[in-house]
Amino acid sequence: SAMSDEILDIFGRPELGKGSKVAKETNLKVDAGSLDAKTFSNFHGNMLPDEDRMLQFVRRLHGHVAEVTCIKASSAFGIVVSGSSDGRVLVHRLDDGQLVRCLLQPKYELGPNDLSVNMSISHIEFGPISGHILVVASNGKFSVFSINGDLITQRLFSETVTAIEVLSRFSGDEIVAVGDITGKITLVYLHDLTELDSIVVNTGVPIRCITLAPDQVALLAGDEKGRLIEVQPKCTKKTVK
Image 1 (spheres, rainbow, N blue to C red):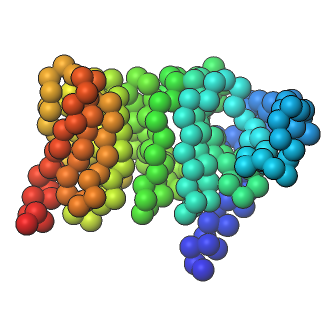
Image 2 (cartoon, one colour):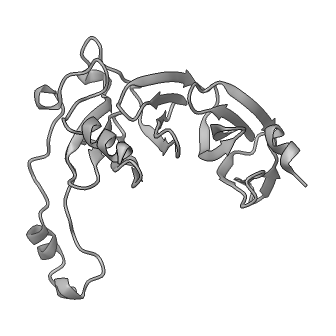
């Protein structure tokens, strides 16, 4: 299909984010201590034989040298994106585990045109339609990349982000629901991170999780005090019967 051909072309060579160095020239360190299937089996010598196990080792994806703090895979786009505590964000192919590109690098490894947030990565999400990659750092800095690895936009949220969910579509757009430490839920457009709506559901009580209700017109949020709250975005009110 056209989409499949496009994806194959996009990921045909290992590149870093726009303005960065190619992976083979990079300061990106590769862990030489590969954990292969035989080594993995030795770790579990007293367990069931390989053929009787439900879980089988496949491969190890290389590139991170610090604690991996979040990971998100997209079967639709055939990639897995991961972030680590030093601020590095990597894109690998799902089918063979090959490194495609580095979206963000630690500050201490930056070249003149490289991108960095210099903070641990806390969340990674995909736009279900566009394939845009949303990366959130622990300091509240949001970065949106295209499926090609180009930086689209960035925004710094003033409050600590405690929950995030990319919604299907409201009014024809991909929307990000952001919960923060103050008890506020903010809706922003994924493509440019401009604010669509916001509401404080419980002052001073952090939002810990957000999801979209099955009817597609309401959000459900859980807070730190054990409350489950239903919120209806203004842009969906006209669809409620």
